[in-house]
Amino acid sequence: MAQRILIIEDEAKFARFVEMELTYEGYTVAKALDGREGLDLVAAHDYDLVLLDVMLPGLNGMEVLRRIRRISAVPIIMLTARDSVMDKVAGLDNGADDYITKPFAIEELLARIRTALRKGAAGRSSDTLQAGPLVLQPARRQVTAGGQAVDLTKREFDLLQFLMEHKGQVITRDVLLEQVWGFDFDGETNVVDVYIRFLRAKIDEVLGKKVIATVRGVGYVIRDEG
Ligand code: CA
Image (spheres, rainbow, N blue to C red):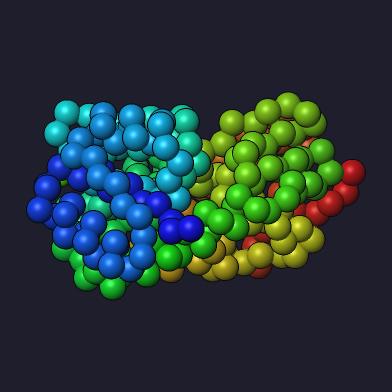
């Protein structure tokens, strides 16, 4: 069955252009010309991916993103008009999977879509991960520590998931940046340390012990010890 993509974009001509290209590639495409219509469609249908424009009239793209994340883990690629670092950071922190800056080559969009769909499918199919008292369910995007639910942002969740998938292995900052933040992340590499601190603050507090260990000069590891 064809994969279904929803485009939420107020510029009708641009949306139509993307729709035609995606349809040509074999995707089934739906369009919403504003955020509210987009939210209604996400609530009513099961999409494999959402393309969400940041610059929307009324309910802006960031707000639409936040509201979609309350009801769905569907992969979302943000379309940003400006090459704004703030938009990228805000978008990714609010649960977007990727972003692409307009204007873009359609081939680049198609590549991003394939990547996001692949990740989405992997996330849905993977089994529960466990490290001692820490349990992560990729499909439900839920984490519990000692049976207690831990509320994580998307980025924190992705980071923890990657470490748990590689339990017992020391993972370098470079690998974490590449795997969790993506190949085109252009910020500071200490962002990894910052997010490890966020995770520790949330998890260690509940468990009363350290789950993510620092291997000085190398990286981080989650060890499975009771
Ligand atoms: Ca727009």
